Length: 186
Image (cartoon, rainbow, N blue to C red; front, side):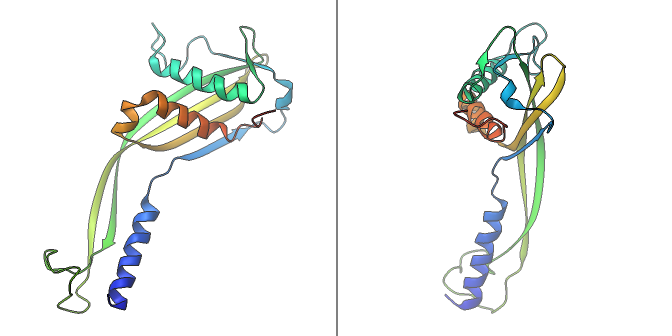
């Protein structure tokens, strides 16, 4: 393979790797709050992920996943909690376009065997349609009714994610909770 073709191939691979979607997590906290003062947690009576008439499966999956993560951090569930937890989920259809280098093959049948005209490469526009999902977890001090921590994760939602919703939610909650002020085991 010639040096220009090798460089073009490497550039293409790097471009595609840079476009790979990995979930991004974000968090904010009230710096004046000592989180070690909290020992119990509970949930808002009606969660943002619920229907007003009933608790959704998504809410149930979120409650289980958050309870596991908070238990790892030394908090216990209580009917009279120190902090209350709420969730919000949003999905949005996105379209991304990008320009990528082409290998310069004539309808693709010559490449990778030979390039009849040196420098015949160009660029093509690729369109990618996908669903982006956002999960927010809010932690509110029960006595002051003040938001003390919020975490979110944003990433692509695939058909596989939807078919394995409980597992997807477990992973998303674990990703968000890596930013929680209390570390596992403490």
